[in-house]
Length: 404
Image (tube, rainbow, N blue to C red):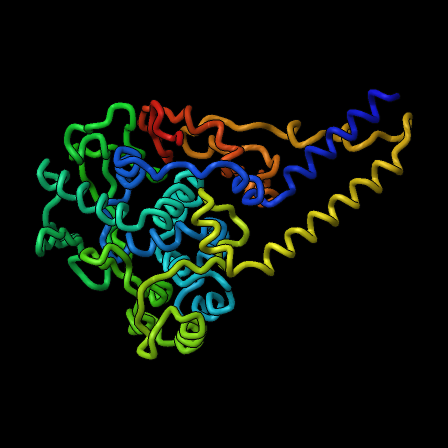
């Protein structure tokens, strides 16, 4: 009898602990050091050769991983939405414009959504080491060019200006997303202990060359939200709300201008330097204390709600424990605690990296009937198990690649 009551208490303590906002736990420890150059190279290898206009949207959107998941679901559920009908629905969504812009690229959204661990790492690196991230992309492009794997083609233009390599679409109406193996395209990889991540889309067939293109993506209504562009010399991303106006004239751009002007993030001309908006983070924890302290200043109400929600769950737990008696229908522990629902799996091929829903930054988020992976620092046990082989639809890595 005593053992059963004690077991129930332990289960509820686990539930209450996991229900705490991940940031409240992560921020109690010592902040991790900045990512080393080999870690940045490893992280950025899969996208460094994407067109500038696309890579800028990916970098911004990666700082809002939960919205990326929501957008990827939206694409799967609304494949037939086009033009004005798509605009009408997107205008009702409260996602960041960079996330909305990626609706135009389902393949990219799928990559970011399925590989949330990588997406969060990318976003955290961009927030904490923006100059380093932009510089690393340029250095990787130089390596690819020297290896003979980055040149102007019918799909893209390579422009070199003042030691900066720009990648632009050959046609302003179509963007081609390249597929390549980073272990080949950049030449000899200099960091054996940090092999690069890479991603093969579903249905990918290995090409004879190191660099290949799938069919081009005709830019549509969603690309009207693509307002960012890489400022390589400044090491940041510039925003112009009026950019890509011709792709979508039905966006209420004045609304965004007013919101950003009130926050001091934009001038009257609708232009400014990109700044992370913590309201789109949706409670996902930051990697380190400094970043959390910088952006959590604007989320006091959100944190207060999280604390109230926690108090409510704690009170509910106490009431349910009080109602349970030995010999009754069984307490919370009999129904299976968080650990019973499955732990971390290997971070390998497509669809194999899902983790149990035992809490974390995305606790309770489901996709296709199964819980979305817990990709907080507490739940990243599979990072050291990144497989080295190429698998269809999966990121690959190896060694210590996924560890901090």
